[in-house]
Image (cartoon, rainbow, N blue to C red):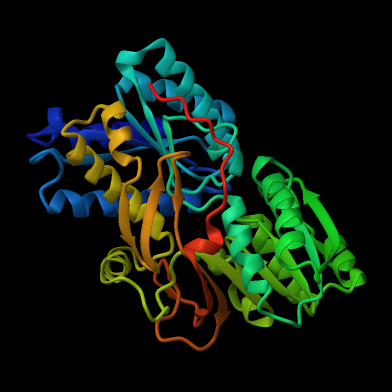
Length: 412
């Protein structure tokens, strides 16, 4: 799969008259295996964003952007192999976001590579790996995160929960790896700080990435706890199965999630999603009333091309901000581009976002929304209409999602 993907890319590059001038951007994601649907969605998104920039003339007066898909099949060994491939190819930019364990691997690999080979420096552009430590104690000049981190997302969820006086008891269930543990720690801290009246009545860590097939024991424990709300960072099959088992058991709770709105997950819930109350926190859903015109136009183009509803607007602004930084730097040199990205602002769907210079963590607004049968535009995935969509519950301001950092940034 990897060889085919990389080989296909070079066939495209070699057919271009400007191949030598193309700025190649590696995308390391699972393009095969049980999480492949999420990785392929990311590939589609970044290719669409790059195509739009190329249609406007590219960067640096005419250089095109190319996305180089590098399949890691959600394997740590394959992530390392693809990083070595990226070095051999001469890539200066790596995009990744699916799986914080892989993101940490990339951060450590690039830190070492750039120290040993400063003339072949690489930069990591992180679209969704949200473990907070990456922009705190593990921060690096070579890493930029374009998504809110776990603490910011949990702050958004808890802020919205504080607006609902019916929430009294919360059960937490998360995946047992860096990201899930980060969610767990943030939830304990922020619930205690912002909603001390809410009691945490359960706290589970599960084996991640689709290994749990039967959620019946967890559903029984949630029901026995008397919880009225489940707070979870689960994603992919670990969330889909949790939701489907809860729906099958008629569990009387509402779910506050980070990734409940992934279109591939909505496809996985099917009709069961209508049996529960499912909420998500993110930066975009197309039925929100006050979105920026650019984000809506991108969503329309993406739907027309792939028959998929647009979900991760941060992927659009990652490529747009990279292009702006390359033009601002007047070069594709990662050091110059990195310095240009620091403090850069961009008009996101809900207002201005900013790449904070002190830790390379994007600062942004968020919103919480509920999956509903009342909508103007339905969620579509691979041409299928699921007859449901998200409706906004509330917007979380930048002030409520801006948190302090412990980063001590070391710049080259």
